[in-house]
Length: 208
Ligand SMILES: [Zn+2]
Image (tube, rainbow, N blue to C red; front, top):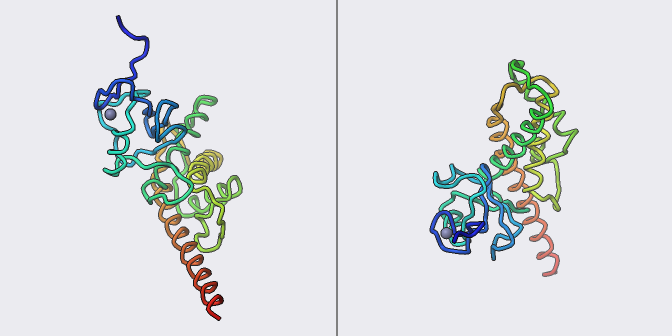
């Protein structure tokens, strides 16, 4: 007799354990998972070849892949530069894929020069005001960095399409994602430095 659904881990075959599911660019924890229920993780490198779309993996295998820097949890804070980049790409690619479902995508785009990059950033910022374009100017202590990276990627794709800089089946958003990630790391360091200084000032005050 076969069960209707195989819930063994696809990587280590432990029965009734494969509850974190693979979806191309990320993994999502299901209710059977102890540690990753409702959580999402972004791939930092290519997923293992054995994993097909919607395959389930156990918590221990996910733990190991997180330790090996293959996967990173999409969190409010503490994201690595690579995670910022890949979450932005998730958003940009998903948005563009949605657009392609509704409309025949253009086959030609404008050449992306410095002016184009700046125009996309201006438009993107008016759709979703992310801090990356002014890394030292936007003090946002309650920023949810995971959600913000995803929304910035989506906004970027919309802006690129509107301005005529994206075409074909899968336009390359990786340069924009890399620039975004670099600025976000600078922004996070700026905020941490600022908070550290504030904290020191408060401590000095107490000593008086
Ligand atoms: Zn496993």
